[in-house]
Amino acid sequence: MENLFANCNLCPRRCGADRTGGRTGFCKMPDHPVVNLIRLHYGEEPIISGKNGSGTVFFEGCSLGCIYCQNYSISRGPTGRGIEMDKDSLADAYLELQAQGANNINLVTPMHFAPAVADSIGKAKASGLKIPVAVNCSGYDLVQTLKLFDGLVDIYMPDMKYFSSKLSAEYSKAPDYFTVCCSAIDEMVRQTGDIVMGPDGLIKKGVIVRHLILPGGLFDSKHVLDYLTSRYGNRIYISLMSQYTPMPGCTGKLKERPSQRSCESLSDYLASKGQINAFVQEYDSCGNEMIPDFLT
Image 1 (tube, rainbow, N blue to C red):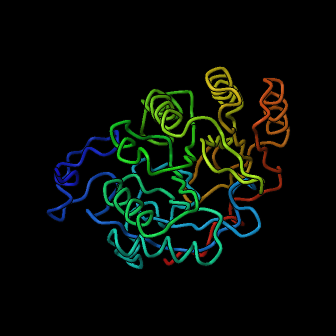
Image 2: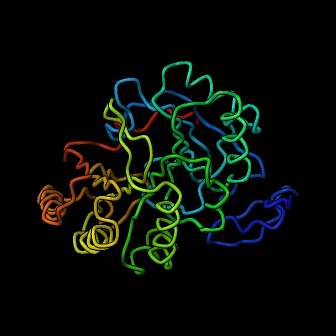
């Protein structure tokens, strides 16, 4: 099989870095997964975390690089504290989380390691992994890379951050974000199909699209909700998040939280669209409270 890290075009940046030779591209990461933290996590949507928690694996690096990222301490490149893991050690980690009672395996920002992570899921399932596997990603993903997970991933949890190319260029250096994200979510829905819930009230299969409300982004958020509800309706779950918290280095509007009025307005707007499969976060939720103690 072709080594997809040798001329890396796994993400829409298509930087072509030879990550096998020690070079790194936009994600700043090598050709093998680097994991910062593995733990049961209770800060996801209730249909993911449940009572037992989500078996979460936090990977270092990111191919999007939003300037307001709440996981900035591990997403902007290697911390020097991460653990290098191959497909076998990752598979063992998933099985250990299952043994701890995790509701699911939750892979956070794994896409720049996609070939190795896909192999690890296949290995774990062949070795007895029974709980659903979720990929938690930015939405800025190539269809060709997502196809590596076809038949392996049960749940996708992508963001849809922006409608405006101006905002996506300013905040994430990705003017093509919306176009790329639309194609990516189409592929995710194709792979998983409609939402499937278990008798325990937890999601077993499907797509949860998350939208983080940004300060000053009311109208952009409405465009995002318009698109998601018109294209997918209740085939997907929409998670409207108000936890935005200014991170170090944020300037201008991003130094403030979105107003409570804007968040309530968007909640009402989503309800007016007839979206039943929805989760709306409490306004007093704070990003800092949901950030694990990363190894930094």
